[in-house]
Image (tube, rainbow, N blue to C red; front, side, top):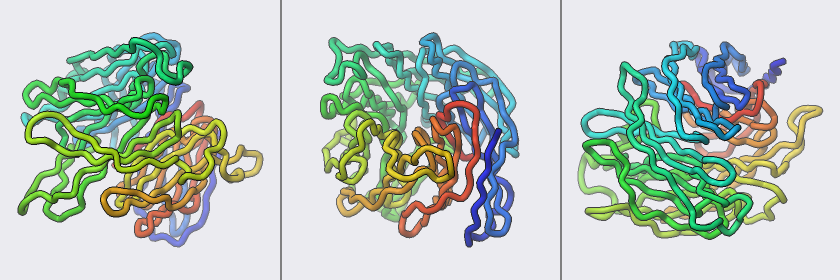
Amino acid sequence: MLSLILLSLGFSAIGSATSIWVSSYAGTVSTLSLTQTNSTYQLSNSSISYDCLSNPSWLTFNSSTRTLYCMGENLSGGNGALTTFTAAANGSLVKGTQSQTITGSVNAVQYGIPSGKTFLAIAHYGNATGGGALSAWALPSATAPILQQSIYFSLSQPGANPSRQAGPHPHQAITDPSGKFVLSPDLGADRVRVYSINATTGNLQKCPSLRVTPGSGPRHVAFSTPSSNVMEKRAIEGTHTQTYMNTSGPATSAPVAMYLVSELYNTLTGFNVTYPARGCLKFKEIEIENSFGNRTVPTGAAVAEVHLAGDSIIISNRNDSSFPAVTPNANASDSLATFAITGANKFTFQNLTPAGGSFPRSFTLNKAGDLVAVGLQTSSSVVILERNVTSGVIGEQVAEIGVDGEVTCVLWDE
């Protein structure tokens, strides 16, 4: 039975209901509805779809076409699936098309080329012994996605952690701020794979990888960009693809920064990213710190995701049990760590806050940056946390709801 927690806060009303999509290994994509009446938030389950096959693991949304893309990982090791949905204004979903994919589809990002065509890059984790890959799909507006490219990876020998690095395991696909490159952290190969986007065809073209500490297991990255007013941010609606253009003078000299979280070592590493006049991205390490602010890492802890909000870096830590249970008879709570970005793209640990339950595999901030939705994999629930936009501090839990199965992804309809 779905559980609900309501807490009172002194916030202004957010108006009409906001939808949040949640995927689960149980085979569901739920549409949650978040409303606020006076000072109380309410989170309810408005609809459930069972149409995303093969253990749904990741969601990405194009708000201009109201299309939700669902990746099916297939934990049994067979082919995965890519399912499209049309999202109504209230967040309810109608199944569109379904395509077979390489096994282990765990993450995806949309990207575009100057002609206006859009594509989807999918990271395929593979299975325990390998099979990792990256695929690119063309996204025509009226038909099913079309597989355009499959890039398979291999290792000549297991990595420094053989039990987790027997083969390549790409865990994310993300674009850089220029929108001209796709990157994929590979947990099994200890590298961040880099591909330039062919501006005519949309194909992914191999660049030199960023090699990281052997055995560290890179999982996810996030980018920051200069906040100078000479840079204008232009995004493909509803995607992670961003292009930064100089609109009123010379581009700022401050470099773009990339922040990497590595699962096996529980570390946060910063890199300055530079763009040669021709060729691929260049990286220079800034600093490294563990995901608990250089405190002792709890045994069994594993970092999951990293997101940026303003000058804050937010990381989710799984299986650390750093805080007491939020509700009676619940497990101890894992954590979210916040780091503040300082000068020269360096960072400093700010605080550790309760995630609201166990295994915060996925989390995402709303557009305003004042609410955080956290998908708790083994707690089988979603919680909403308040966040102070000025200080960057994550605060109290304001709503919670149970979800069938292990939660894999949460996504705001914004």
